[in-house]
Length: 262
Image (cartoon, rainbow, N blue to C red):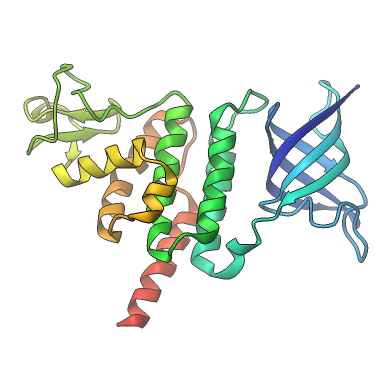
């Protein structure tokens, strides 16, 4: 049995018996780890709020390869991301980050840049303007899938390799993983319409920082267009990927809010 010390982001919390929890943590050292935390429920829980959803923590646990649940020894809260709870839409997009990670992470692998990106995304979602929430989240998805080895090709045709620069009539193939030029799009069966404006936005979400997206957010209509392309792309390239329930909820809440404003 080894003692492991690591930073972690708490992705899922399930009550277990009367006083314990089963926690899924995204650790900076080992990737996804399932943990049993004893005595953390009740009027005076151990570790306070360190094992709640969204918690960024310093974690100490006992690791044994032969068991699926590792035993928590210590947990110290670094950041609770409490401002995500200020409003329902903001919270839904935050949950979307956690749901995305739970779907795409395969187990104990070195997290690399994705771990840092996930923390930074929650930080930006806490404080960014409402109109920037959807754009920041889609930027997270595109960057995250790139870090996982499935970067969408947005500069050259994935079918013929020709440099294609936002030409009218070009398409986007989720199955092939990127843009197809106007000539190739005629015989690529799953090619979706890709307007020059949408093409530019996808490039921007891939290459810009989250802070830049927050400062100059794309329109809701444009972000919805990105969603119609990126969702089938994720389903085509990530094993067992399904559309995120939290994002559907966020879009419903945004629609309801717009109706109330009118």
